[in-house]
Length: 479
Image (cartoon, rainbow, N blue to C red):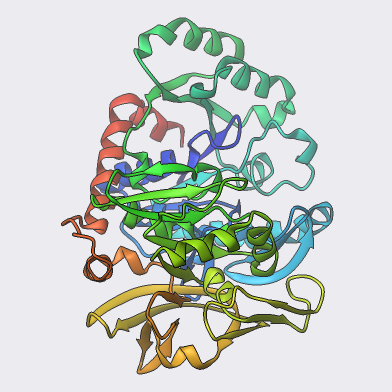
């Protein structure tokens, strides 16, 4: 079976998007294609058959026209603090480890990684693998499962990608070869230049220099793809600033461990909306019409961070001026009166006060709810297909006014005046009918945007973009 791995000369060089575009391109050529990422680190997760995988692999599966599967991302690391992360293996939580202890765990993870890869490969004409970070981080090479360790164990040829937009791309690629072990370097069969702005012919001399210095053939210079923002992002580093120019202002605090932030993407594409991501150190705008508290991988720690920014005071001021508040998942938990963690799942055992905007109490429990959910929004009569990924159970009187119902049971909650609401349901705004009804209830004239159609059209445009600028036939020969 054909297989190829897209590795990066650095983080955030565009590997995820390149893989998504190539998946769509080769699928349109009639091949059975599957995406694979041995190890991912992200708090932006997707539900795949009752388990968790990185959001990027879910998008890549969509580009292939198939449902996501846990084998597409067998190891997912979800950072919970500056020094520790939850380890998800083949969709299920294995443990939580400190970063310094993860190296000792890695030798146990190669077997499930290869197991998942071989299952995918048996069903595909082509598997396109995405690396993580950079193989130039040779200090992490021992027992590596993410880049060259996997490539050599599974015998997968590598295409190395450099990001020219940040500058220094010649040094990125030539320098990577310089620090790699010769056997690792031998796995690289070609290179790509990504995110070029301007006339690509201006880089002809640099392109030839890289070929001469490394001996690797160049497979193309990919210009900046201007529609990337229409696809779900996985890296929180991609969040920031203001999107849209509508008169209805939605403000979202950028939490330290913000999770599943692609919940916001469909709102940002509505013509009547301006979506503003508020960075730490900046105040929440009191003139906001809606403030969304997003998901969090570490609710209690992020609640302390929220208060440290003074956002709790800003939130009260915005409410007094007429804003409404929506909490999603961890943000929903923060809106209650208390968050109890008797088993110390998120830190020291104990209980902390919530923001007190909903009459609810959340208790953290070790059992994690990971499921796709179909809910009814009683206020509009619309149906929503979303997903849940969370620890904790929430109870209290305000659940008697649920935001949704699931099989006749309440999901989420609302304050009596309807101005504060919350839900565990991720992905609610991808449903066009619900999104339009929700915005209309807030006085926004919604557009006629179809979020799913936008994503599909963008994936097709990305595939066309790559077909124009990459030697895709040659890449397939190297696979």
